[in-house]
Length: 460
Image 1 (cartoon, rainbow, N blue to C red):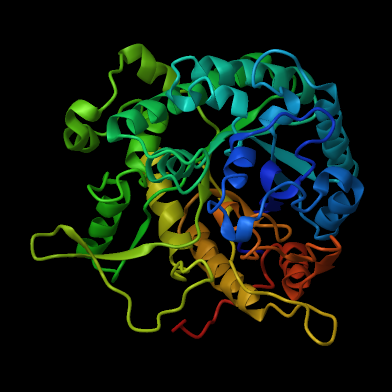
Image 2 (tube, one colour):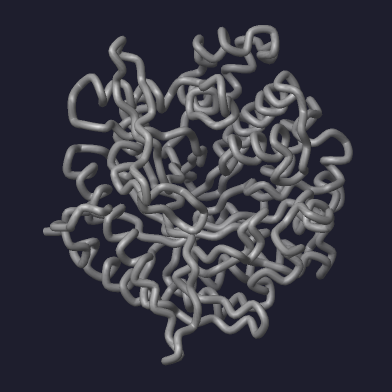
């Protein structure tokens, strides 16, 4: 009997701007990421998403690569400006036809599409009207969701509203390192966040009201996850506290501020005290709008800090030893994050968990034998999935796992410098070359996880 549930969803993931390309094709309007890429110095080596993986022109090829893994789910996102070039108003039929082809190609191959409505590529026309700072933005997103439900909900049942608001708001509106490249005041960033959470809630209401197939609805945030330095109750509690507190430094990156309103119907008191007059004005009706019933909690986990209790029981970060293992993104490799993350989050928010992203940024290339040997990725996934299996064994309700990503793609401000894929992309020829990890993941899926060894040498 497998240690993963019988109906467990094994999948892979991508996002529209990262793989589609065709940014000026068939009526698609520009997004904030098109404008950001066109700004000198913003993206590594001047890379852009104009071509990306050219998935727009390779629907059948990519659908077959996905299906041949044996996955039952593919997480994708919709390009808002491909469907509605100006964000509101006139629809672009060619864009709808593209997603019709993609959804149908997946379903024909036995793969269920899990669709994210917003994965960071806001239509530029809406940004020019104020973007997420504009109080009309929740209505814009609601209208977009209505259009999507009308067209795709006869075939799509699994939906996510927003992907990682802590990133598209924190890096895009506060730090300026992601599109749209703004460095706003804390008060303005918190206002934009408030609007985004209202947009989430209004989208959920639309999906419930208009979906033609019974919907399964989730949210896909990311935050400042911590794992305990030991199994002592004090260290576990310190890691839990650090995971949900809103930090003074790096305050945009956390779970509490983004998830408590959505999951619990309230902003965290500790965050309200920290932000003071910068916190947005809100009403009970606002909180009720944000706090819509959800069916699953999408969790994007790559890494985590390690915390322990100090002499007062407060969390303190344990510094890494010299030479600790890290990815090409300089993220620490912490497999226990896929144990403690689902555990902490499911305990607090009382929802089934789906791992919506997890993977390794590496430095893959085609070797002299014509193959891509990515043993590091296999080891990374082995360790993380072993910890996820442990979480399930300890009673955490985990319903699925989506590896990031099916193929190497445009990694936002890093351009094409980092490779996350199970499939190697030659960005000049656009040839797809399955890596060793692709074959390994096939075996994991075929065995429902039993191919993953459970006795591992500790990483160091």
